[in-house]
Image (tube, rainbow, N blue to C red; front, side, top):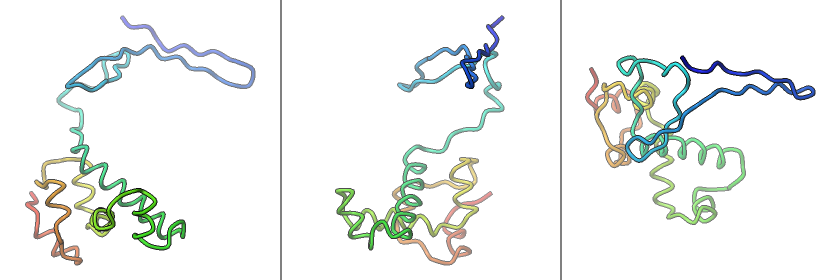
Length: 136
């Protein structure tokens, strides 16, 4: 039987201590909580890290340009120390159809692609984008 979480009061703060174990799996550290979490068959499979990272960067960079923090992708690329064409290709991911982004994040198997394929010149129209990927 595992140890239950402990609750302590420190002035106005509440401190909750949850016993955990750190384990390595495929070279990565995982946190294991008491009770073992969900059975493997019900855990959602994570999307490939490179695609998730690129999607996150794209939306963050787009927000930086739209908020006026940078006047252009050229200025943003210079601030990042990155090539302007790379920044532009990544930022194009912000125009992906919402259902494609959702399928990529959930990695539900309905879309088979790679980051290289996503960075190719895709059509702007969402219905045309959907036809570029196998969807079940």
